[in-house]
Image 1 (cartoon, one colour):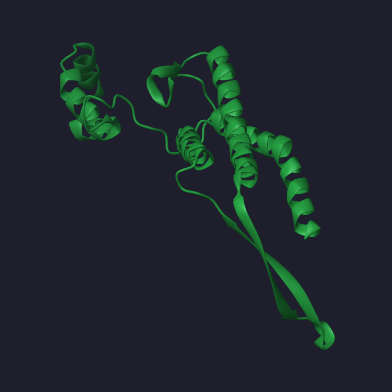
Image 2 (spheres, rainbow, N blue to C red):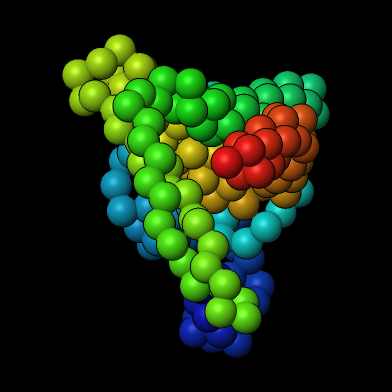
Length: 194
C-alpha cells in the first residue's frame, strides 16, 4: 500500500521525502496498517500461513509462552517432542488397560465354509465391560487427556513453525517406535492362541 500511495501522491519525490521526515505522513498511514493487522485489540500480529524456520516472537499455545531465543526454541522443541511421545504412549497404554480390564469374555464358534468344500470352525470373541466400573471411568479420563493433547499437538503444528512441526512429527514417530512393538507382539499372540 505504501508504493501505491507514493505513485498516487505524484511526481515530486522530494516533497514526499520531506513530508515523511516532517512526521505529517505517519498519522495518515497508521490507521490503515493497524486495521489490516488484526480485527481487534487482542490480535497484535498476523498468524503465518506458510511454514517458516524462526525463533522470534513465536507464540506457543498460551499468550505468556512466547519464544524469542534459540535456547527457548530448543526447550520448546524438547517439550513438544516429549508431549508427542507421551501422546503415542498414552494411546497404546489405554489399549493395554482395556485388554486387561475386559470382563465376561465369551467365545462363539461358528462353522464357516472353507476351501474345497471343507468346513472350518471360526471363533469369535465377544467382550463386555460394565459402564460404571473403575476401569471404564479411568479410560474416560485418559480419553479426555488424550483428546486435549491431540488438539494441543494440532495447534502447535498450526503455528507453521518448522522446528515445532518437526518436534511433533519426531516425537510421534519415536513414541510409536518405542511403545508399539510390544502392542504388535501382544496382538500377534492373542490372534494365534485361539
